[in-house]
Image 1 (cartoon, rainbow, N blue to C red):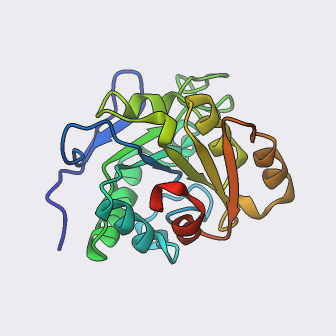
Image 2 (image 1 turned 90 degrees about the vertical axis):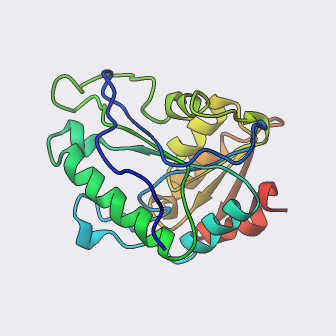
Length: 221
């Protein structure tokens, strides 16, 4: 059964995609599961922008559905420099997103919000920003999500395949990050850089794919 949501252009005046798909149930402050997209939820094919290349990674449905059942909001935070570089546009991004969300919905899972940042130092104007606050490893997208609904950052986690995903989580003040090997996380330098983020206040775990979150992230316990 498909979700009753509206897919469309939700790019703000500042150029960042912010889309609220489903409000969390109740008015409580929610610990939240943040997810990178390519290499975590769907296969990373490099600048993904074709519907036919949009394939869910095994375990994505099960993990997100479990978060839904536990009442944990799920928020996608994804760097999309392909837009800034002119490789594809928001229309292609929207089509990929619709395919991904519908495939998740067919498995009984849903996402609460999606945020995407097109800025990159090598992008075309006006997206050629050196240190944009929303491009991971900056925490801007995670913090923006807190304007959509109330988030308990101290108990939230992020799953990513890149050390920059983990760094963004740490900078946002969340509890921890899970680096998965289903994308760039298989590279030794990504693992080393992610591990370097760990301290007494921020946990870093490692897994193979998103499904490992079910036993490596306290949110699921």
